[in-house]
Length: 94
Image (cartoon, one colour):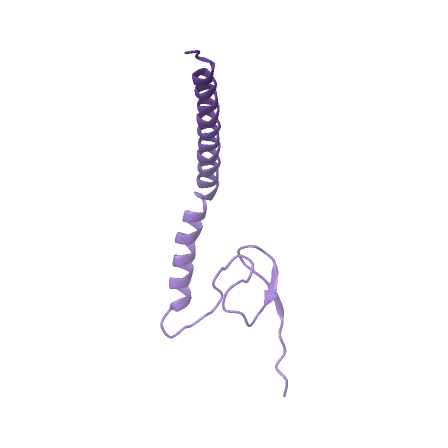
């Protein structure tokens, strides 16, 4: 007898997923229910910790952008300073 797969909505991201998966393939939300050792509750607790860490991602991304812009400005300023210094040395007559 063939076993059928049903589509359900993920409780976290609301996208359609199979009812046979252990976690959502889109957002990673744990779906496996194990009544013997209460694994599902532990998975949900771990998911909440993961979600809390993800709240920092925009701030980290902005920090990386600011650092990248700063380093590019520093590099360009250094190159321009070196060019000006070389030109001044060449302009000095002996």
